[in-house]
Image (cartoon, rainbow, N blue to C red):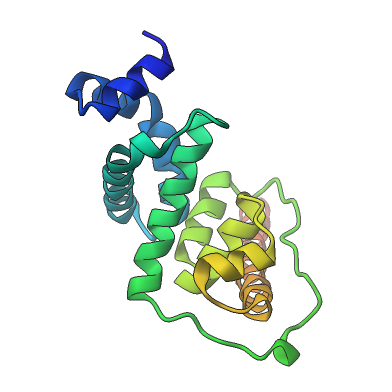
Length: 185
């Protein structure tokens, strides 16, 4: 059965078709949900809410563009809606914005798992902007619209999130090098 037929089955509330869509998309959408969540449980909740929205609105998918991209947008928007409802974004005057963009330098000593955990530990407002800008390629204007904040706040939250990540990575690298010196002493 092709994707178009499966989607049409979902429009008719066919449980088997919904299961096929779930099996096809769950892993990809969970990884997106995990980026926008503080932990595994929260990511599961966001994923479940996303699938409810996908199945409730699947009849609105007009086969223009990719179905996967459509599902990803719903997943991101679902996570963002949860945080807009439960979180207050810190507002900053654009004059407070530090124009310097701190970038976490490539470091072979830091694992990808550590970096992902560090991103998940960022305060919600920084994590959301960081993920949207760095990982998903949204502009500050688009982020501002999605999160109902100013572009300056988006830029400021990104800069602060990057600074926190850079400090964590530098601290972890320093600690690792210190342990190596002691062990090789």
